Each structure stands twice: as structure tokens, then as C-alpha cells.
Image 1 (cartoon, rainbow, N blue to C red):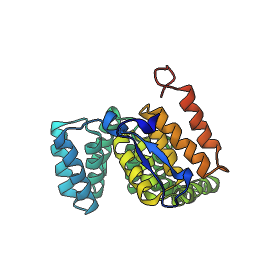
Image 2: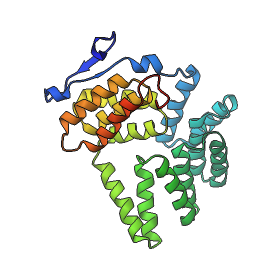
Image 3: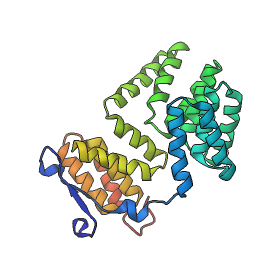
Image 4: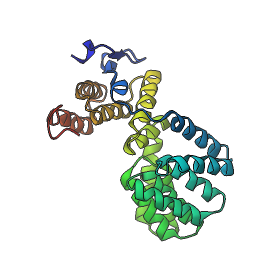
Length: 262
């Protein structure tokens, strides 16, 4: 059983319900990638520079990293963001072209392309870019918000209402869970997992957070842990079982060692 494996952790919710007892193993230590130390340290620094609106410094740091790792996904994205804020939109788009060659399914590159087209007042191209972004990753509040405004501006009332409903749905989910979901959908499991785990430790049972942690477990092929989490979801939210059961059945179909494993 999973609970008997060394390193397994059982966490009980603050509500002290039996349904809140869920398990996870040391899958992150067992399967997590190990990025180079320099890269791991530099990316948060560049992100912090952007957050503090130090765009020239962020661009310089990103370009320095790209000289050593020209295909680095986040360095290319942050360089493009810095270029846009510095008014160099054409250069930002060229940087995004490079990013797309190496990481075509990275949702944030399409989101950033949409922002560039907004600056250029090219609404159709912006809409197209944001649509690609949300089709790859539906946990992008900024893209949905921009789509709502752009659809309204271009007279597409039905599409605007659809985008508005997505914005409202994301607002009903804790920001930490939305962020972790977006990271997961972009393949950043090593960042998403501790984020959602920390949320559950602090806040206890939350159906979307528990389902996300189960999805991460399935992606890591830790099916026993995912099964326990999804069983807890069904106990916490018995009236909202469809999605959980759909994922739960996948753990049976895709057991370890089978061709259908995700």
C-alpha cells in the first residue's frame, strides 16, 4: 500500500474530516528533474527584475543566460517581455519566433505574442495569439481577460461572453491553484507540485487542488497516490464526481508498465 512506503506522507485537513485524509509519496524527489544550478538561480532573478519593472536589467540578464543556453525557454520569454516593455516590440516578436522554434507548445509564448499585437493595435492577430494560448493552457487569466476585451471591441458579443465566463470561473478558484494549474499544463511539474501541496497543507481540502495534485501524480506515473487522492475528492465532493471519476478511471486503464500510461 502507498501509505506503508517509506517517505509517504499523510495529511489531514483542518476540517478534521476522514475524507480529507490523502496521501502522496516522495514522487517529486524520485522523478524531479535537476536543472543546472546557475540556470535555477538566474531565472527567479530575471523574474524579480521584471516584477520590479527593471526591464533593461532583466533584458541584459536574459541575454546573458541565452548566450550560454540559446534555447532556454524562460530566458527567451522573459527577454521578449522585457523588450516589449522597453518599446522594442518588433525585437520582442523576433525573440518569440525563436522561442516558438524550440518550444512551440509553450502557452506563455503565444500569450506574450498577443500582448505584442495589442501594443501594435492589431486586434485580429492578438485574438489569434490569445486563442492559441488558451487552447494550450486554459488556466491563463490574462489571456482570457484580453480576449474578453478584444472580442467586445471587435463586436463579437458571443465570444466576449464566453471569455467572460472563463474569467469568472478562474476567479472562483484560489490564485495559487490557478497558477499551479497553468504551470502543470505547460509541463512545469516540478514547480506546480510543491505549490499545490503547500496550498493543501495550509488550507486543507480543496477539490480543484486535490484533483490537480492527482493529475500531477498521473503524469509522474505514481498511480497509487493519484488513486487515493481522487478517492478523497469523491468523498469531499460526492455531488461533483464526473471529472474526478473520469481521471480516476484513467489510473486503472493506464497502470504502470502498460502502453496506455500517460
